[in-house]
Image (tube, rainbow, N blue to C red; front, side, top):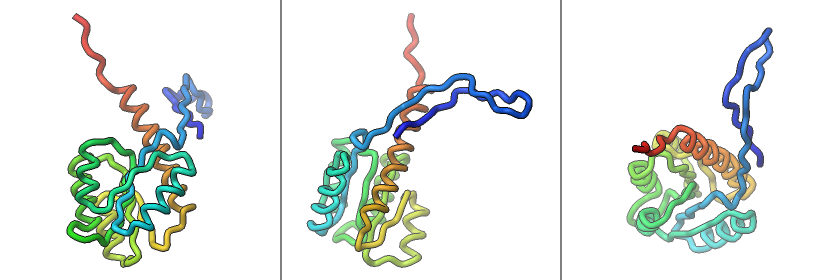
Length: 166
């Protein structure tokens, strides 16, 4: 996927002219994903399906394990189930957002209700998937996540303060 970044635009005679541009390429390999579900079959199928598409995937069998993993490693996306023992996916969503407000979190469940969807989206979830999962829907959302991650990385690098030279 190729992205065009416009640095400046000037309007001349009602025509917008690009002043300069740069391009960045997003690949699936650039996106790291943590899948959190207490159902081993879901973890295995998602990991296999997403790795087949070129994504780097790790898994966790509980919200607690996911939090420990997130303290040790960086991920662009977390895909979590809502219904899990001990800590729910909604609680995990809130904990992750406290750690990293820009974390892209997708929520999945077989017990979908409108209040769950609203609670997750208000809590900062980027997407919501119903089980049985449709891998095509997840891949579309991951493509959007890769685009956002690339754009944020570009903006961060462009606007980061460089160290002052004495």
